[in-house]
Image (cartoon, rainbow over all chains, first blue to last red; front, side, top):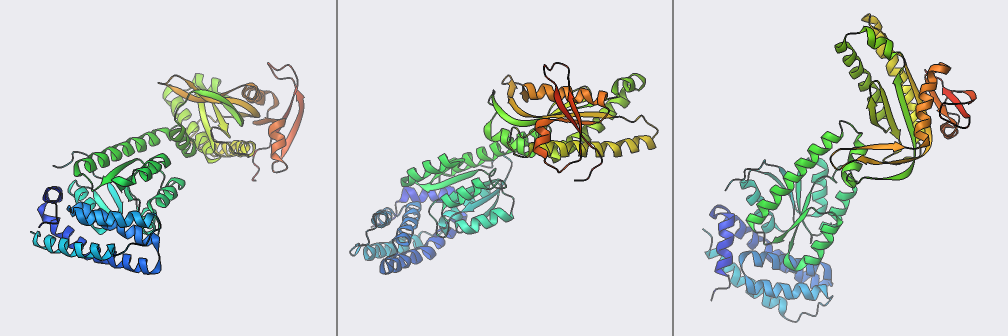
Length: 111
Length: 349
């Protein structure tokens, strides 16, 4: 099952042009793992601000590519960070797994 | 589609690489020159070092966030004029409102819609160009400070009381001179003379607000208040006399008539404001202080000293200048006698 909303992705491809959709995908696949690991560190060190900011960035990028479920998970964590609540259960692990699926699918969408 | 607009120098400040690429490539396609910065601090560094027409600024960033960058820019006279478009996600609408209230030019939601991006960027660049043009125009008749103040506050007509020094300057032997000279020569003489006088007045933060024939009126301490307006006005007068001496020496060498001028300065409360209509307005001052400055200027012919001041100006000067008292004098149009002083020319202070 697809984890990328095709309409959003097509729109992005159109506005960016096929010539640099690859650059965008690579940037995301490069950056997102850093954001997730920053969130893990932030959770361990109780750095709510960094946790929230990285969740925010991840959400923003996920929305750009149409990774709607990933965006929703990141948004929830951003919100919890905003509420000073790092009692997030296994949400970060769930998010990481979702990112794995998104990354796989995006790799196949390079042109 | 290529934009028909003129390209600009743009700076994108965003900690998110995907966003930076997305914005930068879209704008580069439109012919703009784009630089990027990864956080607020680096963004400010680039702003300080370069010359940008527009900034696209993210709100959520490490090190220095968008608010801090925006506030720093708005407080910096060098950066204040660069329009800033905030870029933010939809759920940050409260933050965006705050930024626009603070003074951001506009905002864009992320993910950015390319058509909106192009429209807002080009509109902001166009507005900046117009403002730059306006500023250049203002500077032809006002100092930089006044031009900036005008742009900031707008031309609201209406007066207020301010404490200021008013100066009148006039060419004393102008009439006889005008009768025997060629008209072209006279206009040339006036242009050279005014250029020098404007320079001297602007150097001491004064604003020339009226010119009539060979006379001019200038205001010190308004529209932008300064405590030392009396001293600035007197310094400007001394500078005017010094420049005039050089001017006369040049004219003597060319075997042309030399000119003498009289300057009157009075300080105190004046009613100042923009008078006129929405189509044509001028900054001016009215009130007793203004009349007194004009009378003192006229009195220079009688007393034979080129710079005359009254007691309020005299009191504010302290002992900085060499000043001669001429005692109380009955000036035309005044019911009581006025203490008149002359400021001795040629003194370096």
